[in-house]
Image (cartoon, one colour):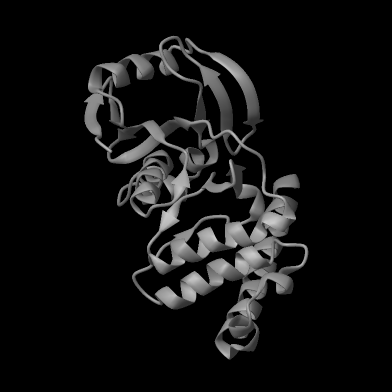
Length: 241
């Protein structure tokens, strides 16, 4: 998929649209010349809306608010791209892996002294429905294909996939290709997915059930999830004081 990259109105922009169309879309977004057709989320962490702009198909518009506000997240952008850029690139990568997902349209970020202060991105709206439990094997097959290619996905749970005409689509994700401990990272990613299911062991194959390594990673992920929930509770308790 061809992509344009340029700077416009103090923003770095990457887009799968021709430059002139990308500028038109960017201006419409910045000037709020669009109609919100569905407001999926509007909170302190992020804004996610389905929008319609004259001359374009309906698309999803997302602003990762908390990523741009946290000091440590901002400092990390001295060495890496914004959340918006990384999500955009993940969608492009997914296509090269032969897997289905939303089509990235445009991502923009604004830096000050090397630090990203704001970012947003747009991508195609994927028609479909959340997978039913009986469709879990199809989703699991897509996850296994991703892992075979050497990648993991963020937040691997059944709700972050869409079924459309019998095919699995990835949504709300960011891809990562672990350089170190790749097998461990991919196994942990699979364990996370299993642990979001109401009957996780039902979908494990015999090799996984009998593997000491898999069992160890499964238990380790539970420890990590427990520690994550504990940290969140601690943060909330301090925020209330």
